[in-house]
Length: 187
Ligand SMILES: [Zn+2]
Image 1 (cartoon, rainbow, N blue to C red):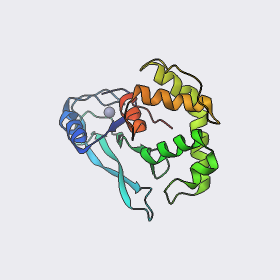
Image 2 (image 1 turned 90 degrees about the horizontal axis):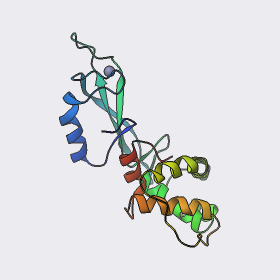
Image 3 (image 1 turned 180 degrees about the vertical axis):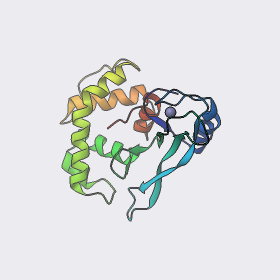
Image 4 (image 1 turned 60 degrees about the horizontal axis):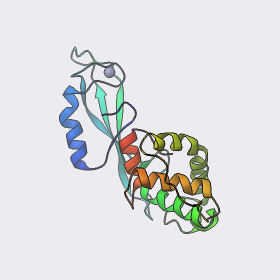
């Protein structure tokens, strides 16, 4: 397991995390044998109307019953969660793709979600501000794809998305693949 944030992509992956808990060092205090399951974080998804959905599982480094843990918790995130907003990586991927290909306004209008236009525009700014961090992380996976510059209005950002697909060839959800593989939130 990587040292950044923890993610899981399926119930089977979560089951595997649980199975290894007793052998996994706590990311805070490095104690082994202290981690136990500790509930879940629930939020809303991006459907219209929004539905309550599980966003992360919690793990507790137990200091109860004389266990030597540190008493802190760890979140194990669903890999398709975008932090701080009730949106999935799939929805945000669609937004980013359309925004680099056409215009941000068209992308915002075409995104099927109950989230406000302001939220979507803020997410776009988060992507814009994250681009150099994303580039660095992607270069650790594979070199950027070569070829003529993207003909759309945002060639530099289009290049980041092309790099993402080259590193994580998942046509519908490369952002979830990125989060899971790198242990960092894409945005
Ligand atoms: Zn601990």
